[in-house]
Image (cartoon, rainbow, N blue to C red; front, top):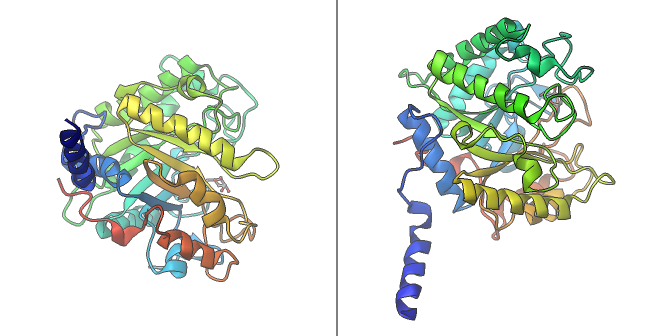
Length: 370
Ligand code: BMA
């Protein structure tokens, strides 16, 4: 018996990266490339953790719109495995995002990234539908209710989604195949920073907004290349994390957004606690998990990568970890490495460390191949 158990454990360890059982996304009609990507998120989590960077291919700490350039590649010779992109402003019909990036450039770079075999994830900071001010306008508590079916801004919300749908539909490879995207709307719902935050709407309203959005893009607009990522901010416990959860039929990936803010909370202990809960919830719900946003603004600790980030993700079954953007126009607003920064060499140690495999773009193989 003991021998049999040992044999089975060795076989299952060897099977690790090569497991072929296919998990299904919450969209029953997900395209085969989307299903392949979803399976890859489970598979890669058994081998290592994909490294991601927001807006990496668009601009960096002191440059903007240079084709092929990337702060991550400048530092370690490889692109990130996950590219984050931002759609804020698209809902209003703008041609450029709230970070002043043309949406057609985002589409082009996103398609290129997928063509090289990388993963794409999209965030969205839509303006407050009641006031017309930014996503950060939390003056009212009725914005979410106002865009739900029956609400006074519902027609406007459909128009917003129509614009997003056109963008998503335009994401096609040269041979016409829809490029799968991890869509992460209404993020950080356990914080009070956005008009959809926990002080601004009830759990029922939040869930209704999520489900309407999924249903509209998937069923009304016929988009079947989106995977849906739920990514609360800091949370107290599993109940708090799940309080606004739309349900297993509406979510594909369980995420967490948590920034290192020294003096505000204990990053090491807090991440350890929250990522453990996340891992358990992922197992219980059969979903992959990801550290969907993190970073230390300005990276004031030269060894942040190996001494702060690595210890909290080491040994975890996370599909990816993504650090936020390196603004080209705000010298201290950066979360990723850049050439010449004092944490650059530590970043190289981080991506080559032999304890937890940190995967970059060239570590990915055929993630879209069914
Ligand atoms: C925030 C900041 C903002 C930016 C927004 C959307 O965290 O980086 O400057 O506009 O993300 O990218």
